[in-house]
Image (cartoon, rainbow, N blue to C red):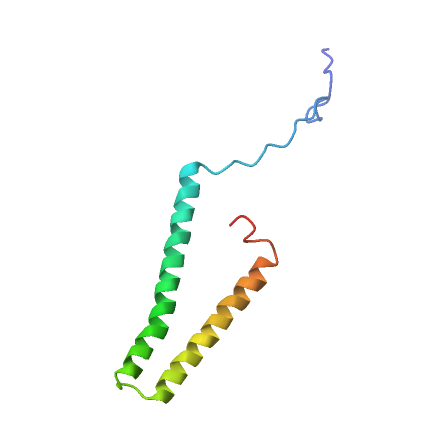
Length: 98
């Protein structure tokens, strides 16, 4: 009868260290940065357009002052929402790497 040095399924004498998480490649990081840059561009384009177009239309007397005020109020609400979301999301450390 052969003796087994340790029972099947027993932990080995040498504990292995947990594997380190895989690091993203430079290509993956560059692709992420491109999406961030595209998002910043579209956000800026939208912000400028949502203020400049109504201002130009008001200046050309195509819309009234009330319509301009309503549009600028909507931009203020949207901007406040974006800043609040950014603030609340930054508190949990999600944006810490950017």
